[in-house]
Image (cartoon, rainbow, N blue to C red; front, side):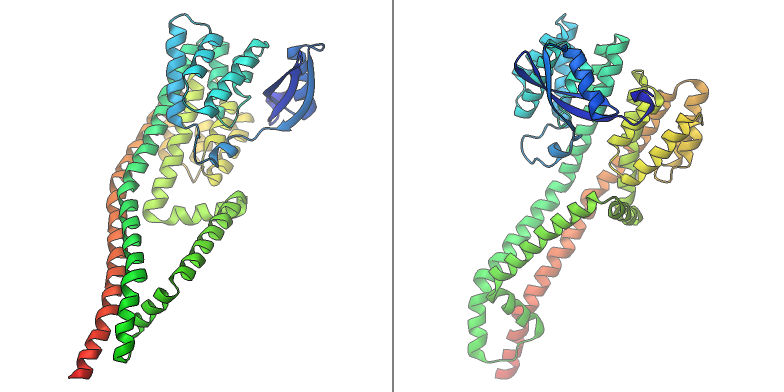
Length: 411
C-alpha cells in the first residue's frame, strides 16, 4: 500500500548533509519511511538522519501574536515569486531573492530553509513543507501540482488571488470591530476613573450625612473600596477562562458542542457557517483547478476548514468519493454546508466544470458574508450603547438616590 492510499502523516526529519544540519518535511506512512525517503534523496553516504518527529501544521504559528506570517504576507510572496519567474529567474534564485526582501523573520527563515533544501536536490513541494508553521498545506499542494504540470506561474497566480481574498476578509473583520472596541475601552477607562477617584470622595460625604444608602450605592461603594482586588479577581477569571476555553477547544467533543451552540445563534451562526463554507469551496476549487486529485483536494480542504463539525462531514465525503460514490450527493448530505454547494457540484460534475462551479458557490457565500459583515458594526455598536448606557444609569442611580434621601431627611 502506498502513501497515497493511506492517511499520510507529515514528518519533520532532521538530517546532516555533508556535516551541515538540515530540516526537511515529507509525507509518509511512518517515521521509518520518512527517514528512508530523506536519506535516499540526499544520498546514503552524504546524509545522516538524526531525528524524525511529526510536524505540527500551523499550530505554533497560530499562537504567536507578533511576527506571524499572515495571508497578506503569503500573497506578496506569491506575487514576488511570480514576477521573478516571469522575468526568467530560476525557482531557487527567486526564493533566495524573496528571502532577502521579506520583512518577517519567520518568513525569511522559512525561505532560507527552502532554498537550502532545493540546493540539496529536494523538489519544491518538500522544500516548502519544511516549514509547516509558515506555509499552509494548500500552498504546498498547489505548488506540488503546478510543478508536476509545468505550470508553476499559473499556480502562484492562483495562490496570490486566494490569499488576497483571505487577507481582505480578515481586514474587513478588523475594521468592523475597531470602533466598538474603541468605545468599549473608553467606557472602561471612564468607569475606572469614576470608581477610583470620584466615588471615594462622594463616600466621605455620605458617611458624614448618615443617610440610609440604597442597594446600588452600597454596591458602588463596595466596589470602589476594593477596586484593585476586584479587578485582580476579574483579570484572573478572564485568564483562567481563556485557558479553559483553549483547552476545551482542543477537546473535540467540547468543540463540537460549542460549534453546535454557536450555529444556533441567529447572526453569529450564519456568519460562522458561511465563512467556513466559502473557505472550503474556494480551497477545494483552487486545488482541483491546478490538477490535484479529488480525494487529496478534499483532505486539504478539510484541514483548511475552521469547523470541526464540517471536518467530520468532509471525512465522510472523502470516504464516499474514494469508494466510487458521487461527490455532489455526498456534499448534499452535509448539514454544515448550504444546499447550494451540493447543487453547484452536481452541475459541475455533469458539465465537467467542477472547479468553476465550486468557485461560484464560494462567491455566493462570500457575498452573504459581506452582507453580514456590513451589519456587524451596527449590531456591535448597538450592544455597546446598551452596555455603556446601563453603566451610566447605574452610576447615576448610585449617586443621586442618596441625594434624594438626604433632601427628604432635611425636609
